[in-house]
Length: 389
Image (cartoon, rainbow, N blue to C red; front, top):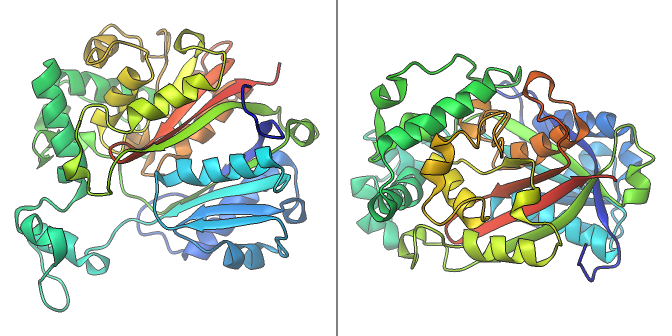
């Protein structure tokens, strides 16, 4: 690895909590489930962890809950960034810099409820407790439904991509069908029935041209990944997976409606940085987990990472490259549209399991190099993983 950091980085354990809608668990209970699963996967104890990285949570509280205190070297609780990628990158950096030797990266997410999100309730045509008012820049967008991610991320970017590169609804239908075929082979997927021929076209618009089947599925879930040094990972229960390169980029203010370029945005500099830190190239990648908060984002990552030319993702998908058996099986767990919104953690975890050879009927034969990515627009993150040769 071309990094100037002190240590190389590996992944020793991964785990999920129970995942579903309106689960009878608190955030803490979901976190405990996921962390215990990851620790068991690695064959480690809570006391073996000396660093915690989380998004939207408090590392000190999590450390106390799990018996991981004192955290003398590293802990961080980010407020906003490219979802799980930010959490993972902070943990990777801590290991690489020698700030700690075993870091737990966490992401917990809940199915949104209208009562918790007044803007969502208003734009959905419902009501919210208190005045139905919003301020700031949202006062111009909320009355028209423009404050929801499906509009200011999915809708704007998908519309621009279709306009600039000639992508069609049929291209997104093809992509949805491929991802669902992968999901039929994953017992953890929420949606496992194959898509009918007209099912995509019959799904309702959420923010035209984004349809319901272009959106990740809101769930209650927690995900955990344990990063450590290769030497420590090799002493754990499962084969070590090495982190070869990672990157995280930001290109604008968080207001994603003001992006200069809706079709590449932070994905392009993030991808360029990722490849600049490794001797590997796109042609070396055996499988990819490319974020699909909205399906257009997967198209953008296929372009940005150089698996095809800019704007060529639709043809790349039509030609079967992203299928199992294709040149780049992509989102082999079914993606977040089928396994549920995990904010990118599922792509890291699926990549690890693919490189370990643990994916059963959806296993990519001989997979040795995987890439996973997260987010779009103002910020993005990605990481390249390899087997421990």
